Image (cartoon, rainbow, N blue to C red; front, side, top):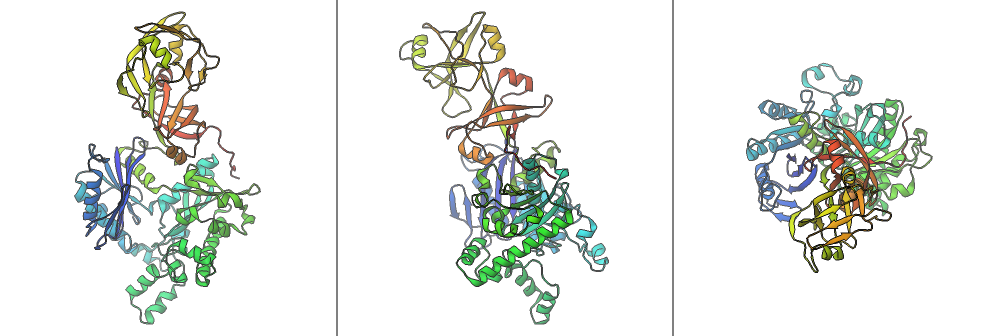
Length: 604
């Protein structure tokens, strides 16, 4: 199923297209400066000026791009559209198929998220017009925080305001906080239900959450995304009398809202702008207002970390993500300074060299003396939204659960032969060129029209396929049942490791070859490109485990990773293994992680 994930704001449309059978990201891009003469569509081919006077025009452009000749939707239909919606209030607490009732609730919740919900709703209505009958699913930022206890979500104002107007804390960035929590549990190799976590989503918008047993029990954003941390242009926490003071001083209500939402935060403090990188560079250069902005940002964040550790009654891990959380070693260092009483201590080299995106999406930056891990996570909210869409349409077990888990396509490897030039000549005649029959999964390799007979001490396997191109030495790959038929006892080996292997006879139309060695049972292995390996935090010759789901559920360990620029993601198992697990070449398995991961911290 192909799922398009949309995040539509007031002036932008961001999109990610996934093939959910393998969770392959097929396309991503954004249309910026919508509703202005300067609209631009940024995609994998570059950036091009476009005319996008509203969200529908922008989505028309996106659909045309995806359906172009050679595009990911050129020949296949879109299965579903997932919408990121900021506020679902108290009625929309889980992903839901969009209809008129759902649209009405999202519109009603715009009073709590006036900067976000109207744009989200405009995107939904535009998408329903553009994509016709394609199912549309809304996934809500507020949903993950829906189980907050009353003492955490209740404001100390007349209770009628909650009962009659919904005035309460809702919280935001739910998919990101959920992703961080699940990532921490997988890394620490324990059940999420045992953990006490503080998760920090730090970007242009920023929030912290206290998570106990997988449930958000408190979070820094409130009824709207304005409360809490210092953000790019938002003030975060402040004395509630300040807006009253500004209003009495002559500033309109709209003016107060504009000031607190769009003119405050890092931009207002520094006078430089909302981009944290610019503020950090200016602070390092000694600019006083930039230094103050950075100090206030760090102070506020550290205060929340300490407060939430108290709320939780302890801490099993501190987790950072977002543009700032993932990329600013300075912020992580300064926030964690002085938190040794919580068991937090950073390894300076690990913190400075942290590259979560190149390490499977998660890096620990704690020192050896730390008892509380500090983790840096590359969040993947869009993939999580796409999974929620699949579950909403097909059921709770229809998508992968683990955040680090990735579907891997299966290629069932039937018995076959790789020939050398000399043996090809002996079997088919001098200078014979093998003829192409069909491609296999790995680029540049193909099954030939020619076949050979395998002759062993006890039997013959006729018409065995050949995979080209030619190799320096002939190799025969069998399943164990094939070996029984032939009467040979090959070892389990990686391709090319032929020392000490048995031989047999190859018989072709021009002659025979008596192999002195070269017969193996191929160790199960997975091919991948360097980019795919980096995304999973793997390197060539690593060993991983994969999970087979279904009627014959099992975990396969000892899967060797093979990395090469010419490889495509694909697991190779022989016919015996495939039959035992109920796999075919149309199946997928799930990457479960390295079989011998680095030792992490066990939760207290």
